[in-house]
Amino acid sequence: MSSKLPEPICAFLISSDGTPVSIPLPKKLDDFVVSDGYIWLHFNVTELGFETWLERLFSRTVASAMIEPETRPRCDQLEKGLILNLRGVNLNPGADPDDMVSLRLWVTEKLILSARVRKLISVDAIKQKIESGIAPISVVSFLNELAFELTKRIEKVSLTLVERADTIEEDAFSPKKMFTGELATLRQSVIKLRRFIRPQSIALAELAEGKVLALDPQSASMLRETTNRSIRTVEELDTTSDRLQALQDHLDMLSTSALGRNSYVLSVVAAIFLPLGFLTGLFGVNVGGMPLVDSHYGFMGVTVGSALIGIVLFLVFRQLKWL
Image 1 (cartoon, rainbow, N blue to C red):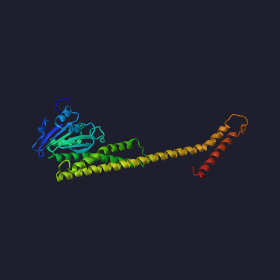
Image 2: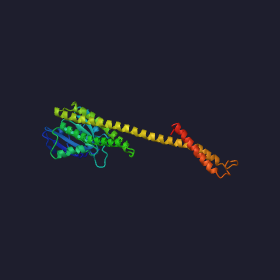
Image 3: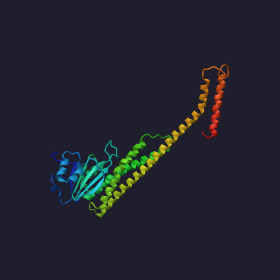
Image 4: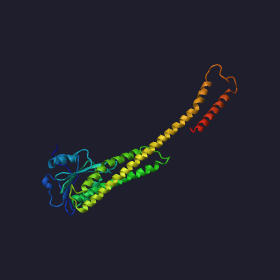
């Protein structure tokens, strides 16, 4: 493995009054000990030398959690800190918002170590604030702001999906509207969001309880409010998923009903024309002894007879309420 030090996306020492200062990457554990404030280091998981640097300075558990290829939201307390995995909607240009981006964090009283694979707009928003001189005054404040930024953008995407579901639901009862793959695409988007937002609301709830990280009353209240918003988003997505399933069942029923109705009409038409087809086929055989062969009224007689048979069959089907 490479001995080259990784290049962080950003590295800040933030004092207790919220004043940020850019710092070089710490090379040993003693460099993380600060008397005032805390350190925030943000990396790209694929950065050359990042894995080596992690394994040299942190435990194997922490290193594995920061670089594992697939993550799900969680909040786990270890002896010296907590592992916090979160997800945010993908608002990068050309990306699908429901293709959620993972964020891995190792948090102690004086350190926030974060890593991502793809750009996360919520983290960039915090980074830009810090670069402008406005920084969270503590580790807890940072996590509060991060949770708020992630949840705020998730809510917006969720609301968009709900509005799309409303539109499809209204169009479903319009006979002039035709559905292609929009309903299936929307259901898939809802499923993708629910997959990560549900465990994320649980992780935020565990963080808000203050069991894994000491919280002051104000921070705990703010984090509980963010957690409540996350739970509400999950409930909205659950409701939307149920609505889309009911809508799919309704459309399937309409399709089945239309198919059955068309098949029934074709069956009745076939029942009417079956004896007529037999009659015309019988008169079409080229054998001796056929009646009306030499009569000028033969064709007219067969035609009128066929029409009368058709009318009689139609009236019989009407009487039987088959038509």
